[in-house]
Length: 143
Picture 1 (cartoon, one colour):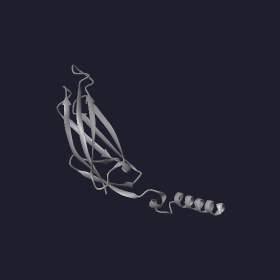
Picture 2 (cartoon, helix red, strand yellow):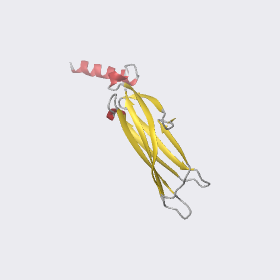
Picture 3 (cartoon, helix red, strand yellow):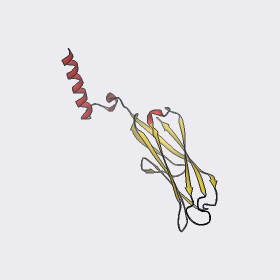
Picture 4 (cartoon, helix red, strand yellow):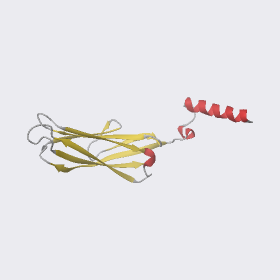
């Protein structure tokens, strides 16, 4: 009896390793995640700059404010969101923040809101050390 259980277990392990069984049989399922960059808001600016460029990457896909993207992943996957702010200047100052979201923690069919605070520090001149802080707000929906 024990040999039979071990044999079945080994066969299942082989099938999962060779990707013959669907992922749901291996304990994970495929899910669709929609990520929307809802807003980018200035929280504070203590003489750092007046003109800015913003960048957002969701699993390496570019996203503009107000736009959304669909990510196909698994229920055990992760979403990586990188928010970047750069001052437009002859010597630009830059700030960046990485947010990692576990798919398993997302509520299904609900808008899950996440924020990322990005700090840019002035690195030269009379305002050196001053900071500007931007808030990126994301809506993440798991289908």
